[in-house]
Length: 157
Image (cartoon, rainbow, N blue to C red; front, top):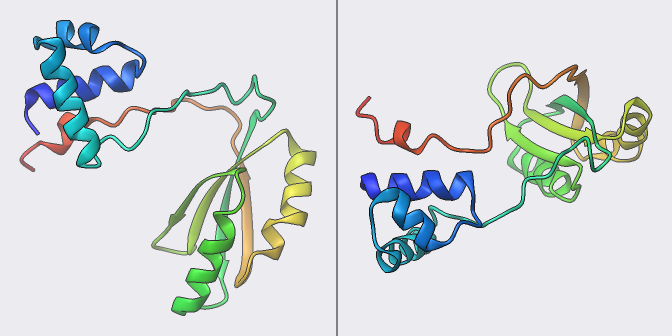
């Protein structure tokens, strides 16, 4: 990737609905060159998809719960079964395999404490291989970024 690609990606992350003409004007390329580079970034898998970012609160899911999951063991089958099952819930926004005390960290969205309790009872406790769940409620989101700092990935360190 060169500096034009980085600028194009920054523009698309800011507004994925911007036209190639608008992006080209901002980065100093023609519309067709900008379009060609964007398509190449898509083909290489750098751009995975285009999405609308919604307000969690306005769609009725204002509560973020961070769930540490400890599994019964680290067997490949246990990890596979857990991951396959957790992917099925759209309330789990993120699932990360972790180092340290917990095996996984989940970010779950729900409509309050009662909603989380129902989700905990009906889904989380039924996940395969779970030994222990520890839940922490987010009180306030200080910052949330959806933009990846592409230029940091090009830094020589």
